[in-house]
Image (cartoon, rainbow, N blue to C red; front, top):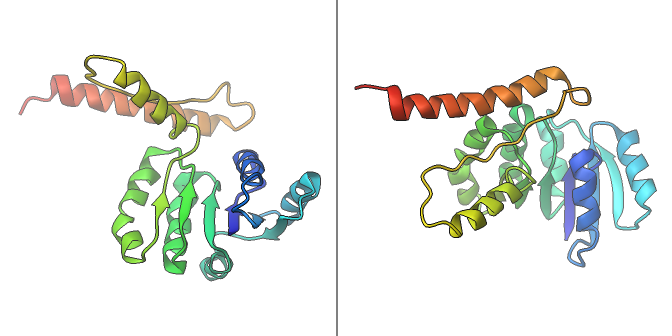
Length: 194
């Protein structure tokens, strides 16, 4: 199977590619990044004959579809997802290839879920949000809930540290979404009088 790893030389992508290399089903993995030197450096560092590096700007739809079409499977770790997730899945659906991503943002998750009928009509499977959070955290929550007699509410969330590495705007965006969800939930359940 020829795998296209969009964002495959980024923080999450490198880990996913490293794990995928162990699969005998992955006969080749194309590490695609908007910076060829970064992708090539990672490929050279790993030193596997299964890997090759390419440069791609995911906002160039026709080039993206062409690259996707030459592969059997797409793994997307390109972030931020609120900016790129929908356009990438749209191209994947047009190319009719199976897809997974690690989308970690509620708004694009809703947008991606809206594309479900299109993916089904194209005959493809598109699995979103299978990273650490969401993904592993959701599975851990299911296990935890299965041990309880009753569960009223369940909220999984993650956040950032000081913002030094990723930028304070993204940290605030993350915190804002967690607080917005909780406040909206509180108002809907306790304060809204119709």
